[in-house]
Length: 276
Length: 276
Image (tube, rainbow over all chains, first blue to last red; front, side, top):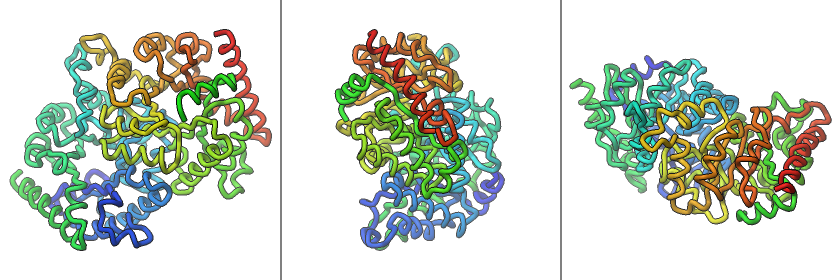
């Protein structure tokens, strides 16, 4: 998918919502456990109930790998279902991969070719040659961790002891350095919503890039704050919500309640887009 | 597996060799492609030919994920084969995972419980709460990236612009900080062999930890240099070789040639252990 197609979808749906498909079998309505593939059946119901309110789905690979081959099968069925039934949706494999060059190429193949995701999240620690193999794929997007929403982000990403002579913390250095990589126009970045005040600084470095923003809702981030400091001309944000939507209810009304939660966010986003 | 069992194995075998099972279907003897599971059959042959010369096998997950469900099945069969036939072997899932706390727990389950690896590699960028969930598993080991063997290591890990007021580069800060995490005695670290001179500094911070060392052979690192600066009282090193061993030949003599290459390294290691 091209960036233009993503932007068009945002404008049409008046939404920049991404729904995280992080399925924990202990949290879904228990009647699914009687089906042959509970994870896929749950995802399918959530997707059917919310696809017109969001522009992206983001399965986190950990929740599939934890169930071994069966989990990997559920992941494959989920991405195929989205690609076939809702091809306008921007799909994200939240995998946080990264390795030496020839190995990163194999990961890129896994997510872009075998599973046919539009994008994959990667970790920056190993630098340029661990990310560039992902960037060579046309109309595929690589979403690199910059500033994450968890407490551990303070350990290294924003640690002032690592800000060096130019006063630039690690997350800024990561953003700045990555702009020089080959095909860097295929990069997007993960920036946690729990740190809204950082968006101003981040937009100085990457004014035009899309930012994938976890941490709204369950993790305490504010949508309006993030938009105030993080939005750009083409919106430039994908706001993720996982637990707040998919576990809105674990009764038989789970899909309806998920839609209600997604609709609340979409309506807020619509206002923000219209008032822009 | 306990650290003591690993050390005992090193002493018995006079080896601290780890063999990387990074199987690329284009590089293995082509007759395997006629079998039902070429990756597993190749691994099995390599393992049977080398298990007495090494103490560890390390499949890199990228090479399995690239082949989708079939690849994940090959990974599962490989780890089960090792655990059943050679239970003394220390197994490493080279996965470089890491995510927010509840998600890292799912990854830990995937590799420690579902696949039953002894250890898994993780990335440090997201800090404490992304690594601690791995550390709670008893007799399981978490091998965190510190200083990698690739060129991109200079982007952030050793970048002097990120060395801050205390003059400590990122990789040192990562080592130092991780020592304070809960159950940090279950940590080992990845340190690339291509940077042998760094081992002296690293040993000042983590004198007792095991270091997993990629980059000997194909990537140009020297075994004797690494041992000179990196070895501790209990050896404390796992030296990995992947391509140099498993692709020593792609003819029908591939297993024999792999054994020859493994034997060369083991003999060098034996001398180093005896001269210690």
